[in-house]
Length: 118
Length: 106
Image 1 (cartoon, rainbow over the protein chains, first blue to last red):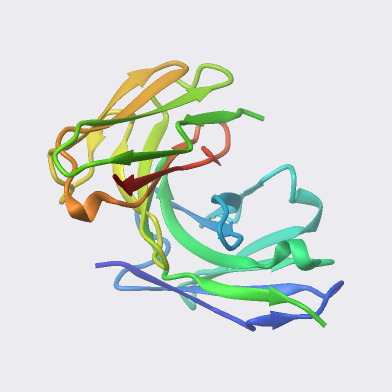
Image 2 (cartoon, helix red, strand yellow):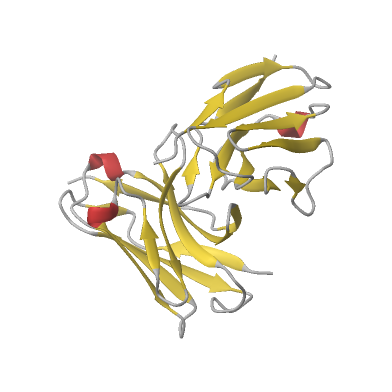
């Protein structure tokens, strides 16, 4: 079955750009009527949707993060990526990727902790 | 932006109890709502989609109802493995999560 795995630096300096990649295995990122999302969760807090991409390349972003977020897809590598610019300590969180169809987010990656600190 | 107000934020219950969690949307979202269970250190798990459809493999003690602005997740008989945090998620225009409900052991 389809599995997702996040990867990227676990530590990012303030004001720099956070970059993460989600690798999809067990199926093609281009198959089916799915889109692919990034979600984050600060320690001890709730879930926040960051944005999504369709394999056509069309994107939607959370308005609260829109000015700093870019999501892209590389169908040849079966991956999609997140870039979040001008990070601060408030961006410290576990970052998840997920396959989505409407409100069905399934499966999810295991999550990766990104800490923003100098 | 559509706001999802989830209540209660936490509850204490015993094994065998019937548990009800609610989510209210700030505007109508048809039935574009899902429910998720999250255990510590783990990714959320989809339980219910389209407000009332049970995800494959999820026990039938979980059920969802509602449409428009008011939605409910019910666990008919709480089991030890159900102690977790539950979130609703709407995807009417773009996705947004409720604040979560932590279900603890009484």
